[in-house]
Image 1: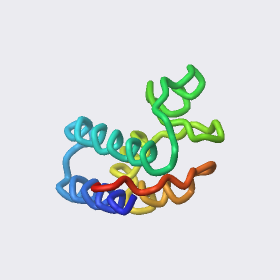
Image 2: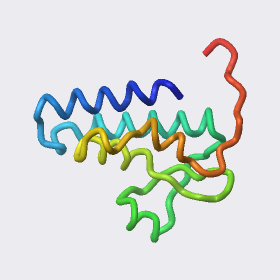
Image 3: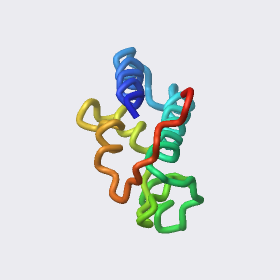
Length: 109
């Protein structure tokens, strides 16, 4: 989960370079997918196809669902970090996740 700080910093670096968000949309998507996978492996989330209401709210087709049933949008959070800057933190989002499970560290990772 500490790698989510790196995600924030990479996004900040992309932002500082000054491109339009559309020019780095692919990179932002993959950074968001990486963040979502951290949520899956470290917090007990699962990838889900979002229902139409969540799709409209998040602007995404997929997200992660926590064990307590709440849906989260790590892909959108990364895009928000790019657009808004440091007040939108992927790492902080992880710490705010409701219903996190304590998932033991994977051996050798």
